[in-house]
Structures are given as C-alpha cells and as structure tokens.
Length: 344
Image (cartoon, rainbow, N blue to C red; front, side, top):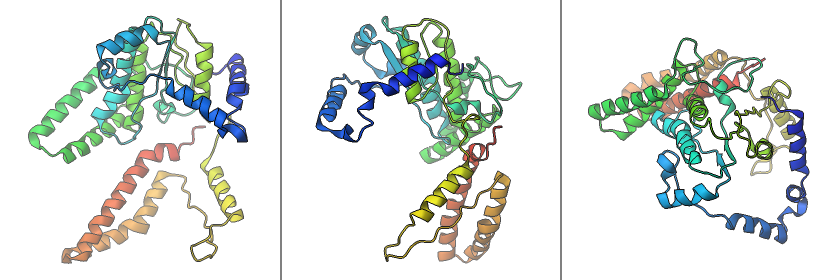
C-alpha cells in the first residue's frame, strides 16, 4: 500500500520532534547529548541469540521472561550477499523469519512485529509495482511453484551427495553458492538474496497471520509504522520505500556529479601534482560491457595463456590474472540486473 497523507504527516512529526532534532545540530555531540545516548544504550538488556535456530537460540528461561515484557519485535537480521551459500541464505533469510514468528507468537503483550525485507524481491519486473505480499508457492517465473520445504530438502540432499563425493569444505562452499544462483534464476530471481528474502516474506505471511505486522520499510518509515500500526491487529500493511519513478536517481547523474565535484576539487598526488580526472566509461547494456572486457582484457589473457605452456612466471601470472578476471565478471553478472535496470 502506498504511503498515505497521514503517514507523511506522521513522518514530519517524527523528524520535527525535539528529541530527534537535537541530533541534527552542530552541538549534537555535546557531553549532555552523549550522556543521554549512553543512558539509552546501556539501560537495555542484551541477549545473545541466532535466528537460524528455534527460539532464536535463546534459553527457555529467557523466552519466558521476554514473552511477558516485549512490546515490539523489529526483525532486520539477514545475510545480504548476492552470492551466498544457498543453505546459509535459506537458514537466515527464510527459516530465520519463521523462527522470529514463532517467538513472536509466544509474546502475550506484543503490539507489533516489524519485519524489514527488501525491494529486490521484485526481481527485474518493470513498471508500477504495488506493495502486495507474496503468496505461498508464488514465483516470478510463470508456471513454477516455489516450495520452501522442497528447497530445504533439496539443499540437504545436495550437501549429502557432496560429502559422499568429496570432503573438501572449499568445494562444498563453491557448489552451494552455485546452487543458490541456479535456483534463484530457475524461479525468476537474479540472485540468491532476493529469492530467499521472498521466501521469508511468504513464511511471514503464513506464520504471522495473527500478528500485527506493518511490513517492509527503512529507518524513517519504520518509526512512522511503529506509531501508526501500534497494537493494530488487522491485515498486514506493506510499504515500499525506495527511490523510483517519482524521484529516480540515474547512474548518469551520479557519474556527472562525481566528475563535476572532482573537477572543482581536484585530487593531489603525494608529489603535489594535480591528478587529472577522466570520464567514467558507461555502458547501456551488459552485452556491451562484456564485449569490451573480452576485447580489452580476455584476448590478452588468452595470449598469456598460450605463453604459460612454457611454465615459470607466465603460468603464475596467467593463473592469478585469470582468477581476478573471472571473479570480476561473476560480480558484474550478479549486479547487472540492477546496474542496467531501466524500470520505466
């Protein structure tokens, strides 16, 4: 649901609040302010836990205590790597949400479960995307059913097979990362992060149906949501808070701003000489970038590869440079859906 006028008004109230404004002034780091912040931080009670385990790895005595006292649970824990191991991403971004929901259901005085997801769950969809929850089994690729339990079973079987074939932790890590990327693209997402966060939203919608949940937001909107949806036991409200069609930030604008800044404020070398700025080379399509990398680097690498048959320094140089090239191209491919995304 888009932000309504009363939400915007509430956001203004939060920003203009005296307790917030004092941290926006030059004197925000005064001893009085720092002392008040220290009191706020150190008056808390801290528990060491882990959302990948049942009850977030908290002892039963702690669960009993917090279930009587907690008013709000803010769930922000996640692994955010686009190239994470599939088992790790599933445990944190999907099953971790389920464990938080189970814990929340034990809290009798809970007024709100605030879950922070990501706009990346929309994948590479274009146009106006309304804030709506993912339904169980829904995927971005038509005709494909996404079942979290089936994915968990797949991971378990895959790991068992790997351990029978090889005991190498390094190989297992590599193969689990490749599996995550493969499964993400199979269901229509560009990376394992966006896939597992979408799975987390599905579990949240299913397991948190009886919980007051105001959905997905960033810091300012989180404060507003806590004020608006406090103790409201009704359907989930989802807010998508990003720069988009109404206020886009293009890479060309970013590049131009950086260029103009360093032209007005040039860098200086250790010897005192002014470093001349060069325009950043921008590409409109990933295929153009890929072709440039082949012509500029890959061909030279393959020539070095031919020389490496003689061994010695040629072989060592080729292996090192080729690993760097392959890693760079992997990262470029992972981020390409966002770097080259037009959207409108």
